[in-house]
Length: 71
Picture 1 (cartoon, rainbow, N blue to C red):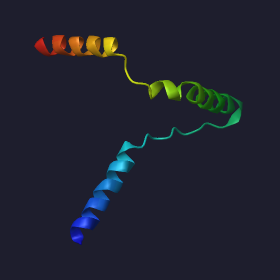
Picture 2: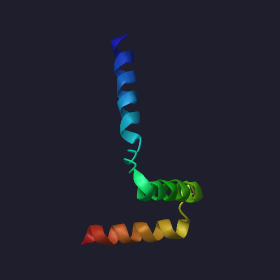
Picture 3: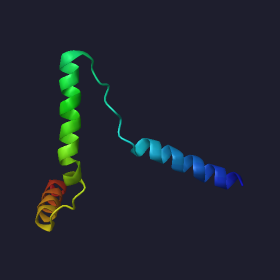
Picture 4: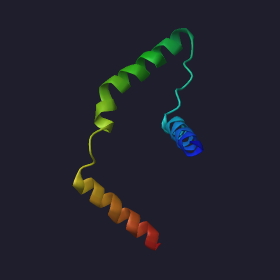
């Protein structure tokens, strides 16, 4: 039973760590624009960040990674 509680606690803390921090939203006219821009950009581009990386780009990234590891 204690193991179940431990697993649940580990899962909860992992989910908390994985959640991105929400930026503090400024107030006033400039803050209103910042909030609008932030929300609009997320509305437009969040779906793009969920798309898979094209294989050609992944190959370039891996090649660069190997090159940097060799020194």
